[in-house]
Length: 247
View 1 (tube, rainbow, N blue to C red):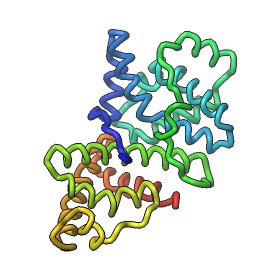
View 2: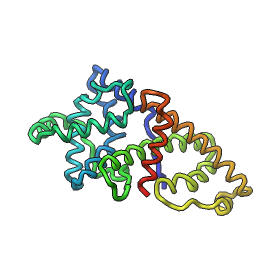
View 3: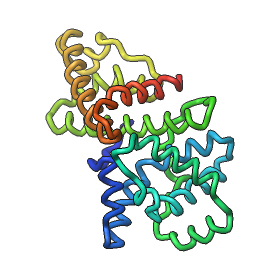
View 4: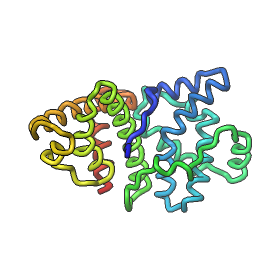
């Protein structure tokens, strides 16, 4: 079972700029769809954290997608020099929920029916983070999980392309599955037998190799969501705290 799926190489800010600047409607819609599919799970998690049931949360998420994203209101006001993308998205969701009026929501959605996110058919994108104390915690956990999965997908693709299938398998069973599924890491001795490796020392070296790839890829990805490069390390620490907080 693959726990990660290949993702777009576009960054958060570059996708926003592309969607905002496109004059061609089809090109703008394509750019916006990439952004929507990447981050609707975090929006949905926040609304569910507000105590809304599954159907109401799905409806409100769809409304946010149509009213704020598809209409390009978020893109038009986005400034990558002003902070972190995570904060921009969360602030936009909060504002939308405060200002939303049922009549306006229905009217906009009827005019934006060309792009709809089938939320009920994409449950695998929602990470179960267990009981949360606040909607913000649910949002941050889902935001972080989405980003982590995207980085893992890219690292996995690189490993398979480079013939490092066994390396990835060691990393998956020692890091990925414990991190995403809460499974206990498989010991090196067992992995040696399973993968036909020489000894645990070889397996440990494989692990280090892919951990370095993952760390580098994570740093690059996170740097695209902050305006100040100095914030990258803190954002990574926050991201990992978000995931750890679910256990």
